[in-house]
Length: 160
Image 1 (tube, rainbow, N blue to C red):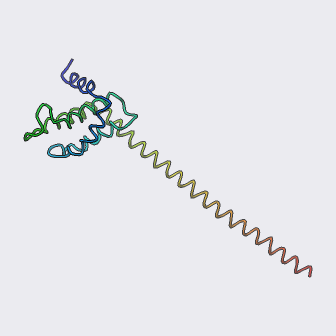
Image 2: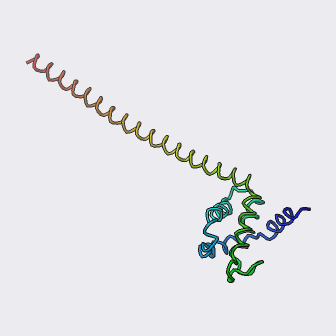
Image 3: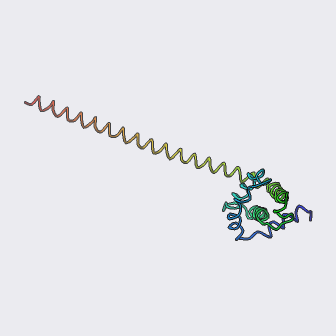
């Protein structure tokens, strides 16, 4: 087994159901130092963890990486200068390992957003069409009733 495969296995084995709660509590405080430069990747991993439809293997690796990030006890302690560089390396490693899954996930997120927008537009269009139809119905009804009233008045005047 290669070193990469061993690390992957390590991340997926250590992930637990309680980890997302711990990550959510501590993650905002980690946006500092070199982590700021990879914060978009940290956020993407976090979104992946929270997605109920994401594959468990990808979630487990993301959880492992973010637990490593929030944990003060890791290969290089976070309190020493440069102590977050190993955390950056882990984030980048997991993002590389999850590149295909993250790409599919990002495409899915965009497609879901596009579908939601399309549904919203269709709903708005349907609602607008219904409102316009109701307006035209009321105008036609008023016109027909007006024409009947005028015809009735003309008929009464001819009879008198």
